[in-house]
Image (tube, rainbow, N blue to C red; front, side, top):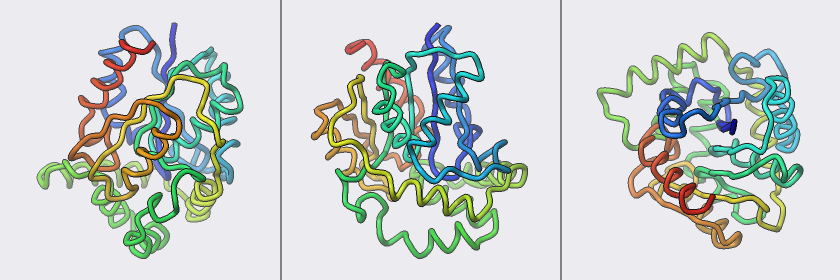
Length: 252
């Protein structure tokens, strides 16, 4: 049975996928879906976050082995999770059958000012490190979602605050994850596996140019959503699943 592995980004845990895994399950049928948490996040919040992306990739392999899963895997990853997927595919190419990378950025392909829009630096760092949980989660929603309605936003923030209360993330772990993301340099060659890239034209956190430049260098398919924000699975899960389904039908 094929296993799909879902990887989230900075400071996020499996529950931040919301209903997306269930929606994906209805489309892919009997395949298993495994959402992996990185050390420092979610139920692993008591652990020290890893300070390198390749170490995070090894953590994924260990978690899957502990669950009795066997590859090759279909990996769907967003942001920092997508960096981990790239490192994983480079170190263990036989592990991965396909990768879908959502709104990622990679050195050396993308300059720092595209990887995280400079106008967000002060507010983002101040709120992530020193703001209370509600301010932090409200800011994350504001920066990562374009299509959440004003009516729906409070309930989403409430849910995220609940996650943060149950499994609070340490400031030191936020810094460790930022360090891992900032220091990672992807290989100067394309992964040997099949790659689909999805990006949001109106991403206010990471420039869409990052995905465009990577896709061009790697000569892989890129699909761009015209209106969604950084958290594409939150803003338009149906579109994400449709793109994956159509691509798998054509390519795999």
